[in-house]
Image 1 (cartoon, rainbow, N blue to C red):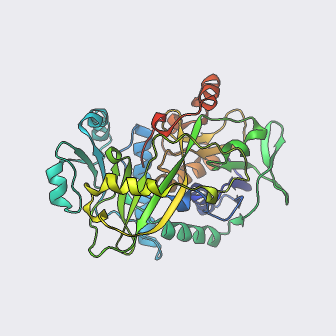
Image 2: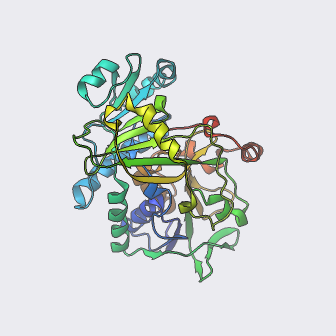
Image 3: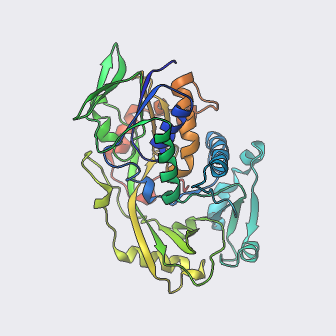
Length: 399
């Protein structure tokens, strides 16, 4: 489709990446709208951990493209580095490993590299880690992590350099229609016509789409991550998706350690209005201390650490654990990219590319039908949204 104006709703990492790829493809006038400041929501509170070893073929193929883009950006941009020095480690109890083991034939068929490591091999390779003897580690040598505080400004700078019009502190309050197509948006300040609208709103999505009567089965949960003061000795290890400890851990800039903690029994957080600000979220200090207790046997460097910062945000999960991505069949002109199940930061590079391809060419370079917005049954959507559940009952896919 030849377009002259594309609106991107949401200035988080997915919206920024989509605007960037549209601009690279010279899509015309690109307008990025955020209700607050760029990347001031979940994106700046992310851990940035990522692995290619995902749960379905679409996700594996997408992550492979995305990580190559990160490496390309890391080589081309002088203010950003993709940290893939040690890959990414996924840790399992023997019980949980049986489920993940079933995916190894998929990785083999797609020629995705991985290593199976027992606990002694993990301890030998990375003495900073101390998993129990019975645990199994699935190592992704092509995985890694991004530092959000580095990546987000680097990406935003290039979005502006490419001529994207950025409207901050401006809410989308309505939509324009013309001949059954979506034809633009309304904000309190202006009416903007467009040939295509890409919504990357995440936790605010239900309130943004209310006028369109568009609903998807997504749940939002409070999540917290903490960064230590600089350690006396380097913490040398891959980032770890450590489900047995209900969290994750990785090294952080300045010889620090980042720890993320899940609160499994805490009920979902319902965002009812665009007025909600993520800075309003809080979590008891006991959550941090309990997280450290869980992790300290596995990562002894956390013993007696001092904490420097805390970030509390929301993560979003769909009913089937896969993202929502693509055109909305019932609303021509609308494209959606949302609910990346804890892994949005490390999906962003490829999601921006795939969204730009779908808007401009009508199709993406890989089959993304598994992520289609139209895959959900309307009755199932209402049942899922009608229940209030704790995080432990959601289908969770960490990074």
